[in-house]
Length: 235
Image (cartoon, rainbow, N blue to C red; front, side, top):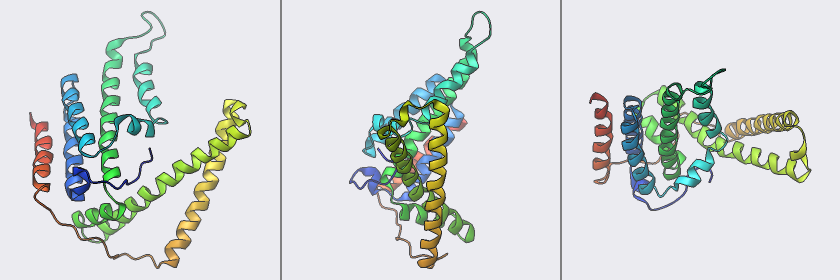
């Protein structure tokens, strides 16, 4: 599953992007405040509800981060490992494990936002929330990242498939890393040059015509949920 917008008719698709940003912010505040197993269990339930309302499959979302998840798993293992008996201290690994799990929950909620929000609406929401040049610059940057990241992921997948077709997957690990890294950077620079040319050809505007945004009746309960999530940090 690619990390990009997918058209649909779920409840999350019909919400205003500013509402979805508020829910993300409230969830992030709650995740930072509640680091106990009980708190994270409650946030896990909230995450499943968000994914259900956004028609976002859990397993496919996790596969999108398969190159990143090993680092989250390795962090508590490394923290708990010792050079002598008992070789592994569970209490030392508990904190990093809970932190890694919290990051996974945040990634899943972010995936639901990306899959239900067009890039233009994300940019419009940011520029509404942050008026002036700061909002324009940040909105343009977010829009470019959301468009550029799926292309980079596709390039890396293409490079790995080409290596496998040429039996490159049998090469030593350091050689495979070198090939993927060098070829990937070459693709990034090539796409960056093409992007710069396209922006100049289209007379990149600091004040583009963005889609109109408006709150509907379904947005207000979601905004209330966002406020409640943020207020849980006080308890």
